[in-house]
Image 1: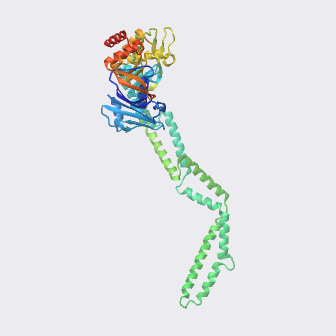
Image 2: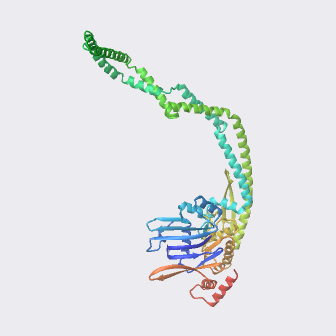
Length: 552
């Protein structure tokens, strides 16, 4: 629950701390004094959309800080997960500047808006004539019904959830073994096709590199032939070719080799002669192999295209393709070996599916039983709130099996006897919805997780006996949950345990709102002011106000 709220430069409030208590807190004051601003500030603090229009005129930044106690265990677990220190009390602060910069902190630690909203979603409900508190959102109806039902439903849901999770695990295992018979057959056919396609290609690890080299050679055969022919002409074919010149030079030196140093030069010329001759022989062999072979070129192209096609499907390199083939073979072998395990799992799947169906039907029957009780209690509450012709029921439609069962539920409503029941959000007016909210909150007493409920003039447009019934409902709720209520109805206000007066004043042409906690004596005066409807308070109104407070 909220212990205190501090507003700084928020709308008409310059600097204000407001203290709240457990139970029933009532905000009093003239229309326009700033009561709803306090609610807006609390909503902003708990994660509502930011609005720079709330920054006080002439100021650069607004800030709201709240102190909260009795934090739920789920909330403490979240804070622990975020490594934020927490005892039984936390401080949340949020600021926004004119340039759009904002700051969010919990116990001094910076957090994101999403983190803040995750923590505060169950801390407060804001109930006005147009607030749904989950009632208008069909997606929430199943959760609300289950919460009303309590332990018996939760026990059955646990059974359903456990079977569902077991079934999901079995399905995963079946999938890993190839799934259904048809799926397994498809997988085996695919694996066999992939294995055969790679196997029939008869790939070799270095093949692609050799083929590319050979393709380049054949493609360049004409250029290679011309180049080698030119070199051979210079080395062996011309009249004064390199080998004949070297041979003659060697012979000349042979005649004078007895002289110092000449025999070594002769030997070197002889070596050069044989080296050049050997080069010429190699080049000649290459030249003879350079005939352009269009058919071989086509064969190489086809082979490279095949390798390219396989690489697109099975791996970038031949090594990758061959590894893929091995993996496919292993997978195929595993599928062939897993027939027995699959048969066992399929039997388990059938057994769990039947169990899930049975337990989901039990859950549906339980929900329908509690839905009838829920509807009856809602209509009883509405009857007490002078809505005697109201019809309310929970409509069930089947859904697929899940961990939550096999039900979709929707709240149906008609404000007038004999009229067709329709979706709640399509038919309830503002005044009807406000009393529906009160009825719902009373039916759910002690079963909701929310710690604070804010009622913003939920009693608007009612009076007399109905106002008294509304007051009783609010008192009932306040026994379980902290209430913050804005009201202009004396009988409602008189039931509060803590009164906060909001006033608006003008100082030096500047408008300021202030809030202060009232003593019991002051609260009698303010309730009397509600009775008289003006600034002056009559003795009769004061006496009436005292009696109202004495009855609480």
